[in-house]
Amino acid sequence: MNNTSAITSAQIALVKETWARVVPISEMAAKLFYDRLFETSPQLAPMFDGVDLEAQQQKLVKAIHMVVMSLERIETLIPTIQEMGRRHVDYGVEDSHYGQVGAALLWTLENGLGDDWSKDAETAWTNAYQLLADTMVEAAAQESSSAATSV
Image (cartoon, rainbow, N blue to C red; front, side, top):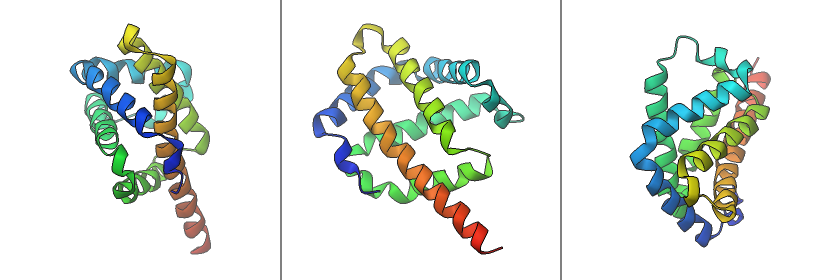
């Protein structure tokens, strides 16, 4: 991932500042996120059949927290993010799903933060999410192509 310049230091600060306001309501935010995701993209719900959704919500919050806290040194997280992308191939995640997830995330943040949400916050979170999604998609593509060539 070489697009770390896609997010500025001011945007990183804004992502961290708004995330700090989400942390106290993170349980509610995670539930809102999955409710919104399944409402707007019901075709994704079967991917979570048999999954403990409460545990999944906690994993989501932990993953977002890890990324947010590491944005200034995102390159240290690249192997972890790439591994997440490769794992998501096994779950049936397709490239188009990342946009649906991103939309649900932004909606959740906007609704969870209320008046603390702004156009600048939306841009910052969009850029941060895009860094994550691009890295995961790239790793998934490499995984798929190496699996196809080894058959």
